[in-house]
Length: 457
Image (cartoon, rainbow, N blue to C red; front, side, top):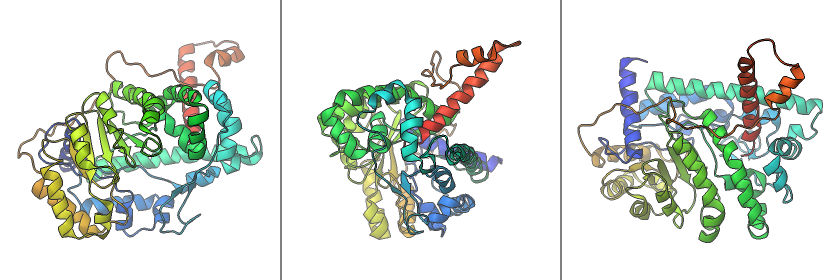
């Protein structure tokens, strides 16, 4: 990285980090999730940026060059060939199932039956192989067949390729464009694993009434695997927060009482485990979280960046979360898509003078900038932040990073399908350093389970 890019990278990242930590940077940061706005702005169809990784770089370069004031850039991506390799049926993709210029769509479904909670809780590997994957991966409908075995091989190869693409993109953004990722790694709320990919909305709503105790038991059982899978792909230097898209906790999916009893306890435990490991979290509060966002005051201050969706009241969020957690949002999607630059400027001015006062605020749309936002409105938003969102002319831009977890921290017990003791017995013992062989065996076992677990959403 050149000295110029290093300085630019540090300034952007530190401004972002400071806001999350409830400090006062030189100005309000601009760290909006693009929701593919950058790719559409670069002239690509939705199909192109889901199926052609070269388009990612083209879009990144154009976006950063045209909007250099942005402080951190969303890193999440779909890669269509990974889905195709296994016949993943949880999403419809543009150009394959939908028009090439249509946003991808989630497909609701019951991929876990109501009587399978005990299997999920007590033997998740068997559950995944024998129940979930045949229902979720179309090419794995007949486990043991040549096509099913090939699907697992292709899916593993494609996952490795995807990881390489994402790593290379992150390095390019940092070294060539001086642009930090706004997030690194991802996890879901335990309840959302059940309500999204496993039971589906209809199934989990029935379970809320019929077997709430099983929901609680399953949520707690999922926590160690959620944490280990999230840590495996998080930023090892702890520079950027881990992404947490929150779904079914929004009103009116659950009543406040149901949220307090079924959703929040396991989510809080999970978030605290990441925070205790030295990470911050960027939580996308999708939908109306107004009745529930006060719970984030129960977590350590300055550790969670809460994106407030357009259904939420950003001003009320500031009242309830200000001084506890950083919030992002405030720009209505309708204004960014249909409004005028003058309207955008007035809205940003209001936000800077109210929600942005005293720090702890990042300008954003409703959990992101919509992909069909007008570019002139996005530019107006940026210019207005520069005009009205300044705090100080002096600020220390030394970034915060740490490759080591806090002293004494230990990860949860990692899942394996075949314990080392079983493998060792099959080998009849080893002639040399057992520990050298064991740690690599278990590393690959952990990685394999994380790969299975990754298809659950």
